[in-house]
Length: 424
Ligand SMILES: [Zn+2]
View (cartoon, rainbow, N blue to C red):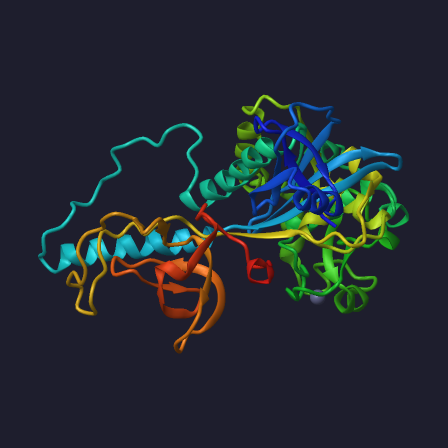
């Protein structure tokens, strides 16, 4: 189970507690619910208390980022809270593209328009595309939130996919015999990245891939990283004792000689995130993707973003994950629409420009529980609310609910919680 986050009466973070203890405190009136996501209780007459070190571990991914909190226990480290944060990179890219197209079409149609900007302005140092920037902002937002409710003393981050320092020493002797070693994992991650995670010969994806010698070992091929490629099992077997050239792929030999050029570009987002986390003032430890995978496989944990996060770095070597642990699902949802007013199908304004975003104490995106006593919508509905000035709201999929039947569960905070409907 996830532990429940706890703060004292001055909202200073205390050690997280078990759900059973939290229920007891709530029942006895000694605590109240402060926030549902992440679930946090506030103790009514406690001030201060002892805390142990808690580390926040992050595995940044392009689509989903795993975040876990770990605390020391008898067996090493123990996961006490976990979450999977889904980003909205593609959505942002699409929105910017559509804005650009709308502006361009107005210029062509001879309408009133915003002039095109030319390449006469410099981008600030460390600029990232908005879709990547949003990923970094999501992670640092959640780290900040967790810091309010939990005494975090350190951060551990998977900074790079593989250790480029280790790759410099290019002779990889006996990779096959070292599959279980950390070294082998770093080599594998490097090769997977270099060959685009697909078979170098037939381009097969999502199949088990093997490390393969371009010039076979039986013909004096070396174990250097420049002589290694990634192949699917059928290709590896079919190639057998041939070189890549004899096998009908002379281009492979040339490509293998080139070092992986854009390692920096691949890792740009992660480095930007690292700088952001350093700015929090907490000690930041870093690990590599090879190390994460090594730790996860050695401890027989299944593949999941939050489990990868738990296995990050040297401290991930022995980490205890309770079998009943399931992560909080978080989906970045954005806050408001940028558009000033809605349009009809001809592109003319359909509504008045944006006005007061709050209606009757509710705001579009708030999570509400609506208990309708009678009528065609009678019953209880839980979902995100869409507000109207008329007071007739939509809650989840149900339209036409009077605002007076709605009860606020959680304010709109830019994120959705897909598991929310099951919440009592
Ligand atoms: Zn193949």
